[in-house]
Amino acid sequence: MQHAVVSQNEWLAARKALLAQEKEFTRQRDALSAARRQLPWVKIEKDYVFEGSDGKETLADLFGGKSQLMIYHFMLGPGWVQGCPSCSYLADHFDGAIPHLAQRDVSFVVVSRAPLAEIEAYKKRMGWKFKWVSSNGSDFNHDFHVSFTPEEKASGKVDYNYAVGSFPSEEAPGLSTFIKDNGAVFHAYSTYARGLDIIVGTYNMLDLAPKGRDEASLPWSMAWVRRHDEYQPAPIARVDCCG
Image 1: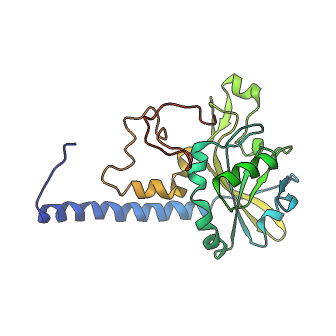
Image 2: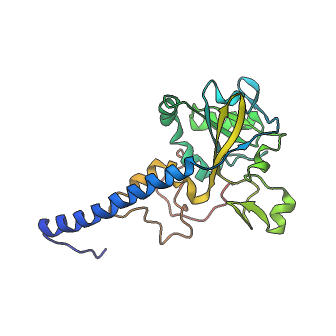
Image 3: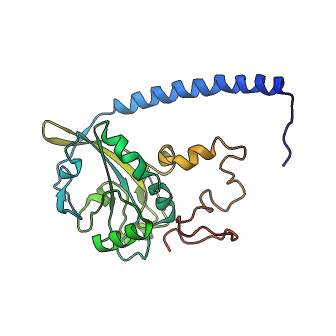
């Protein structure tokens, strides 16, 4: 790998120049976060019901005594043998964050369309502790644009990430936030695709490494990602996301 090698003083000058850019990015991100909080809310009118280890729960129940709720839409459809490796990569970051989110009045729950028994089997394999419920039988996933009918998928016209186009799976990843105010539940925000980068701690750490994410030569950006119990020295080959 060809790279510039300079004196300590030259490196320091370059580093300070980059620091100015980093500080500007921080200010811009703070402004963007403030704008996100100013988005209008949409009142939830449907009675969504989920199934979890505590039995049947409504969307309001998932708040667990907090005023804010964050839901990760995990790609695990009915009959799938295992969850999407990319969603599994993200999910490896959840358990450590949950106690801290609770201190800021936020509950965190994972939702998938697979039946509860299939969710719990995969959760046990991965060793995760976070709350994970099934939306099977409800419109929740479809209404939040993370599950698509066979007809939608075949047509190449699915509504995902605020645009209509093709998508390679009947399930998609995303994150949605909700707030409870005077007993009513409101949808505040949803993000998809690269909008999820911000919650992937490993990616943010790799961005600080000399080679960064080092994905330019791969067939697609997350081709290197495996479920954490599958990593082994082997060539990276393209596999179906949810196979």
